[in-house]
Length: 292
Ligand code: 6GU
Image 1: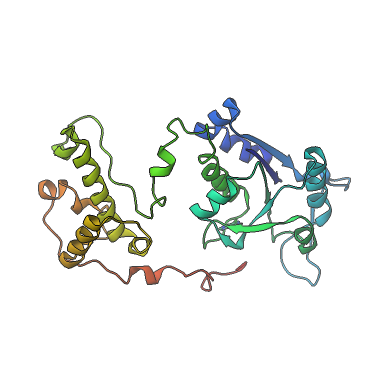
Image 2: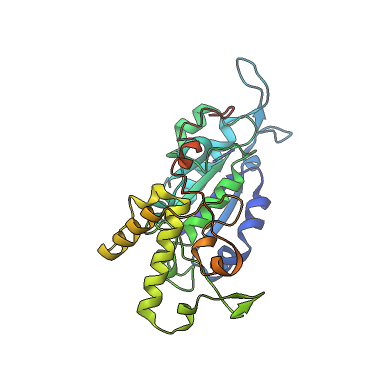
């Protein structure tokens, strides 16, 4: 998979993505990342790429010429016009499902805006998708593009060592990940749950699934509706709901659900706050200031 990023800050995205797993994937050739400096396509003698908005107002708008020419030069080089994703808080909110869809492409272009955005005519000409990474406002599209590339890259064959691990993780099954433990067996008096030392693979699998269900019920009850549970797991979930697990926002969530609870803390009295989800903005981000 070849990623291209149209940006005014090429070093920022290259530095970020050259580290860690994406960096290794680039070295191995499983992905490539190319940053294209929009400023290289300025015809201005001072290399300006922005100007004040027609109609007045604060800030600067990125001019259409350099953006369109940067994309067209790339398209000519590739012999095709690949999907171009404009990073904007006004876009469709990125999620694992969109990451999976985009990971099927052979090339992806990310367009990163700055200032007050990009001239609308450039977007009409080159943009196929508009994507946001969440309901909050950032100063530019570079970090969002890096987030998306990181997420998509780990779905590309050959990027992760363990090809199976991407599939087992959070959201794949609409269940959150179970807690993980490694050596030492006892840390500051806290023991690893004994089942994990038993070598009983079936029992370990069942315990981990149960932990995932507990976590999801505590933290993201909205996800549970879409989770695929066995009859036995559904019964387990019903039992949890009847017991109404303690939820205490001031401590790491899920903590009471582990064996540590007995060792370290007394039980809480709060029930699960099923209404918590209602505090999260539901898509239109109406309470946030421009550019929504
Ligand atoms: Cl894609 N861009 C900017 N500037 N801010 C954002 C965003 C994108 N997604 C969330 N906030």
